[in-house]
Image (tube, rainbow over all chains, first blue to last red; front, side, top):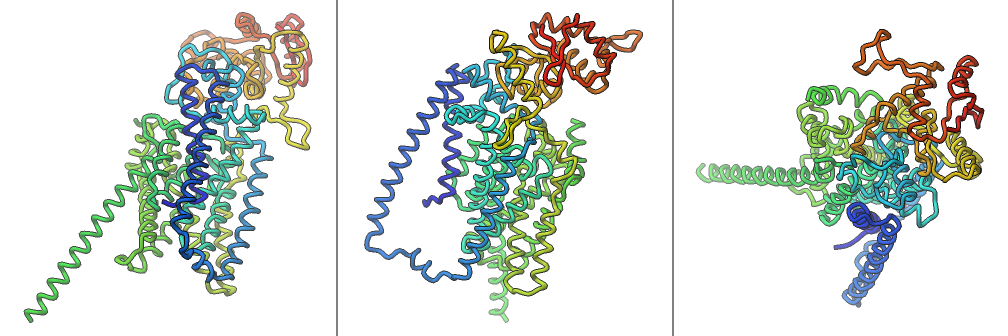
Length: 322
Length: 309
């Protein structure tokens, strides 16, 4: 299996969400203090990072040994690359980078957010102040008398944002409304880049054009909740936005490339960041629909080919009798 | 169940009201259908081509699943009927399909460089730009000014709500009190309070007016808290000091229960509230009336009237 940069970036982010969930559950269910929870998260991330570096070094050495003395087929292919195509790709990359920069500026300077039904900043503030996870109502600061739904309680994004706020020293309002939406935007380009690679594997110009149009759609389509552009620019910190802009395009690219580890990571990450209620989430729905569709299409194709074969046999039989 | 059915029936019409991305999506599905299946080369499709076709089929089927009321109802049920219709569209790779179709169209068009093709490409980009409606009043109404926003670099001040909360916190600290204090104030200040600092305890939170936040807690507000919220909202919108609450099952001559400032002050005292902020843009008569009810404790403070309890 080969890993691309997009797999490393998005897969890494999804693993961080999983690690945050473990730490968050320790705070939620075992009553650990928030500082201990963030320390645990830091330790987890450190260990996983070390393990990843170690594994990559080992796999690189193994690959080096295996390919020693052989010609690099990729290099051979690249030697004949069309320079005009390369130039177009470079120009499109430049335009795309400029567009992304403008979008980042839009997030950093915007003063409006989509806050209906959301209390992320209040929750992060409360976690940091109380040094505990969900002991008081984040909206009033008073202790819960009836408590809250466990499905909502286990969503881990506030813990992740609180940990970032603690380790960077940034105010929670800046982490949630500025930093995280920028990261979501960048990750969404990585996810769409991965989908572009699955759609146009041999054409880099088409891939850049695809990303550029995605960027235009983000900017012009920021008109209502549920549309990617609006979600990214006005609610980039929300779980539903991360699902729509990062998880789903990445999930589709994984399904197209048959990378089922990525698929599983997306389904699990959604469960950790979005209130899917009793429904099992959109990623699972997409995966199941994709697999059923694949099975139906292959069944249909088999029958169609069988019918074609029988027709051909029938025709050749008729010709023979004639 | 009826609400759900209504949502499934009218959802599509509502969804297409504010921007035209749904129309672009249908156009993309139509175009990709012609491109992928128009050539008739079914049998010798490569692995990537098969995956592309499956993505197309998935996108088209789930789009029609969201439009058709029967399947929309099933999808609404899948998300436990809690989220509104718009969220079933999360399963549709809308941006991906539109971008894929537009990319394919543009790249095919620009293979042959001519003025006509260039103009067609420009028109397509124009359609993409006009497809959304990101500057409409309706879009702005979906968003809120960030409460407790810090001033950006080069920008000295944050929001007015943040400024008054900052002043009040400094005032509270100067008085030598504990850093935590409870507050009753107009909506914009209450909205920003917990986002500004978790040391402030507002008498009610945003969930009192944003019903969708109610799901975060099984706790509900008591009648006196609702009274205080309704009275303050009424004062802010009308400048009147009496509010007639008609949503309860109380039958009085007036047709409801009267809530006045004295009753709210009494509730605030019992709840142990430290500070009350009132809007300053009130008529002189109203100011006088409030001053009398507060026993002369009303004083100007950072663009509001402050009462220290």
